[in-house]
Length: 225
Ligand code: SAH
Image (cartoon, rainbow, N blue to C red; front, side):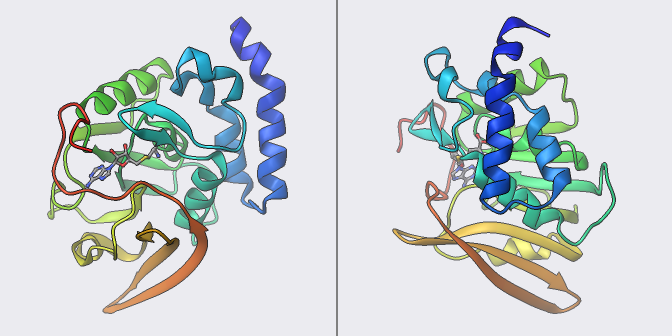
């Protein structure tokens, strides 16, 4: 193990304890989070704070999500499964940022299609996951409102940016019994889980949250924000 890995081990354990205190119950999720070194996703200057339960800047006016939120969204996405390991074949992630959430999700999916609208973040996330030898995430520069194939049916969709209301189109690319986990709202937002049950669509509301807005279109350098 590298020196920095050794130095961060204790704070990583403390972060897991904090997530347990905050109510994360699924040990599969806690186990995945404990295996992903969050410090490699942030700039050197922020590394000492990487295991605090807070979001941190990743440039381009974007942030790496708070560990609690990453854990909570993952827990909600997989809650109807009960085996260990890769419970899903294919998952769509929208707003993959620096790839931290993707790295955690990669433990549960054979394959992830990840879409991010800011190009340099796509490069950053590819590099981060390659450094961690995680090879089952395909990062694409695109707009999560439109840039996925409607020929694929997903076992789950996790969106890390907040639209005003959830896009109906995303429900059409969900398999039966699968879920969309997504923050919705403007200045006040909530985390929603939309489940597809045959022709029915079930909607449940969870935590109050704060995400960046889900913006239409792509950006080559983040300067359109
Ligand atoms: N979970 C990520 C951080 C998410 S921040 C991580 O672990 O790093 C939300 C991300 O959503 C930002 O990077 C933002 O650029 C992106 N985003 C916003 N609107 C989007 C859209 N329409 N399509 C794809 N990505 C989008």
